[in-house]
Amino acid sequence: MPGSQTKSDFNFAWPFRVRYAEVDGQRIVFNAHYLTYFDTAITEYFRALPYDYMGQVHRTGEDYHTVRSLVEYKQPIEFDEDIEVYVRTARMGRSSLTFLLEIHSKDADDLRATGEVVWVNADQATHHSATLPKELIKKIVAFEGDGVKR
Amino acid sequence: MPGSQTKSDFNFAWPFRVRYAEVDGQRIVFNAHYLTYFDTAITEYFRALPYDYMGQVHRTGEDYHTVRSLVEYKQPIEFDEDIEVYVRTARMGRSSLTFLLEIHSKDADDLRATGEVVWVNADQATHHSATLPKELIKKIVAFEGDGVKR
Amino acid sequence: MPGSQTKSDFNFAWPFRVRYAEVDGQRIVFNAHYLTYFDTAITEYFRALPYDYMGQVHRTGEDYHTVRSLVEYKQPIEFDEDIEVYVRTARMGRSSLTFLLEIHSKDADDLRATGEVVWVNADQATHHSATLPKELIKKIVAFEGDGVKR
Amino acid sequence: MPGSQTKSDFNFAWPFRVRYAEVDGQRIVFNAHYLTYFDTAITEYFRALPYDYMGQVHRTGEDYHTVRSLVEYKQPIEFDEDIEVYVRTARMGRSSLTFLLEIHSKDADDLRATGEVVWVNADQATHHSATLPKELIKKIVAFEGDGVKR
Image 1 (cartoon, rainbow over the protein chains, first blue to last red):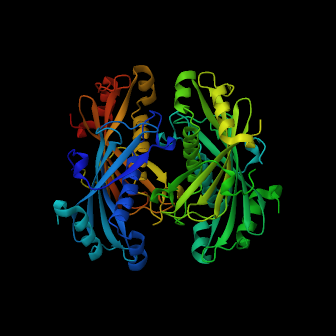
Image 2 (image 1 turned 45 degrees about the horizontal axis):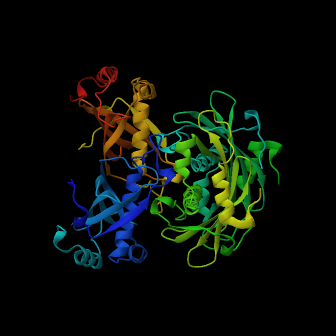
Image 3 (image 1 turned 60 degrees about the vertical axis):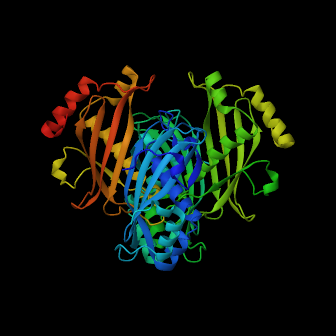
């Protein structure tokens, strides 16, 4: 489980401005939408590596399934706020990727949420797990340096 | 465009209880979610005909594209309210279906919204429009009686 | 109802990259999410005027209710596409604002959808309609020029 | 973290039929929507106690904040599936409630997901945590019997 970190522990962040559709009756972002922010930020993280995620899906018939999501909500996020979702790969298994995520205010260093998302690469025909593409492993190591557990 | 009607003008309704995830900072259902209610109610309308929508998709390689959506919002809908979405087919073209929809409170006859959704049947490979399945036309006529324009 | 226009008929557009959470089983943006794009783009349009929408809400106790939404879907929008939502005010009534919207691909001039959204300014305590703020009217006229009907 | 349990370990379940709006490009429920199912099921669990959650909010000025959400995804859930979300309170602290959740297919005993959600009761003016209402504690104990940790 992720402890709180500073922004400098991450090599990647993706900005969001909170949409009115994302807040609930308390005028704060509804808890489920944090996972949409996480998912979108991971997509952009892949683009930044740069790794052609959709190309892999089409070429190999494999795709990732989310097998675990964790969010720890620290401070509510309001309508129209500018936030940044920080992403790094913390661990790579044979077929799994573990991402650590944090949400910070864009303009201050206040932590809004931490999280963890685990993806497993899977053959879309058999639904069996499949080894991670070598090219992806290489690119994540290059991007993250020593920070990734194997 | 649909005028306001009474519940008795419809042969089908589907109940919803408003989820907290569906209300916004005004504590009323966010405008986009009306289209999700409409879409879900149309799915249930097909089941009630009874028409095997997913079977058609798998058997023919055709599926419906939404080409037009209209919502007229009359009275706000609040968290936890019990509502009913009324559906009927108002018109069938060569490849298109026009649905009229209304949202009423479950417990009173107050109208919350009216709407219109147009679907076009399309070949999923070529994306060209395709004639409506004969079985579907027959079932809608049987279900709606004289109310459907051709 | 909006006819198709060219991008140059608009003074404002807001970019979106389609999120995985926004596509459905046909791998295209689910029909309801177009209204979320519209709503978000209108928020940014107000910021561009520049008009302090949230300030008005807090200061006056008035807020806007969506009373009508129309979408005409022209060409499906896929996961990860870069799109732009064009917004302009087409008409201002005593208490109502009518926005015309279009969705275009970012990189080409292909039209994906047109739409119309009508807002009514309302006193949040009485839910009665309220006249549009004079400052807003002035800013919209300045931003849009002769294009706004009164 | 919840281990897999059988349906008989729970006194409450709430049914859902998967909406088309909830599936993604893999034609399975998008990961974030599990938290919406959880939230909705917890609302219904409160109603079943029976506890007047909205009444508390209006009477006390307190409301619950979600401080932690965990989902472990076991088997994908498809469009139009009938599922049941099982809920029980596993622990009550001074101001916090820990819910365990499971998603099962309605018609078989196959487990689709497990989860945990932690709520903290908070004064909505100060955002400080507040002790749980005594009436709620009493009702949860009555509903759950010995299964709740204190």
